[in-house]
Amino acid sequence: EAGVAQSPRYKIIEKRQSVAFWCNPISGHATLYWYQQILGQGPKLLIQFQNNGVVDDSQLPKDRFSAERLKGVDSTLKIQPAKLEDSAVYLCASSLFMQPPYNEQFFGPGTRLTVL
Amino acid sequence: EDQVTQSPEALRLQEGESSSLNCSYTVSGLRGLFWYRQDPGKGPEFLFTLYSAGEEKEKERLKATLTKKESFLHITAPKPEDSATYLCAVQSYLTQGGSEKLVFGKGTKLTVNP
Image (cartoon, rainbow over all chains, first blue to last red; front, side):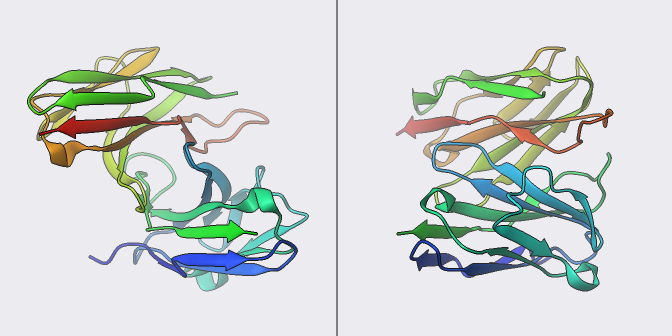
């Protein structure tokens, strides 16, 4: 079974530029998550989708971050404009359901973003 | 607000030297506690879910246990390939103004020397 796919794997941009990340979840998984992981920290949830609807975006900096999940499958996360503090690894995860059982989340390899 | 504290921050063991990692948590109502393994440059890999106090789960050299306030990840006779960062996360029941999102600890970096 194919895992969660993410691209690009690495991205370097100047501050105030924009960037977009793409995620393809495990086939059949209804729930998709975007996390931000700063070096030395655990992942922090940015946004959670159930199919193509937003379940939780309480920690998403909405003045600069946006995300969408068209047709309930692939998702993109965008940052515009980027700040130095956005340098982090952006992880995408998916799960079959939101509640147990089968709510364990499976993560992609992440995109390492460096903002100069 | 849900909180997770993992200790120690880093642990260095000799091959075959058993030990335990600790995850202390504060939640309004625990729906589940998750353990993940993360290798450098990779996303977290799911290990276990524990749902209620007294529950235990095992996988190869790893055993996870759960009480009402903390969880332990016991590593028996570790090998160098067990070297990784181990993350603990909690999910609580949805409450008014709250969320069911996973809240992660900072992790314990385990190094097993041959």
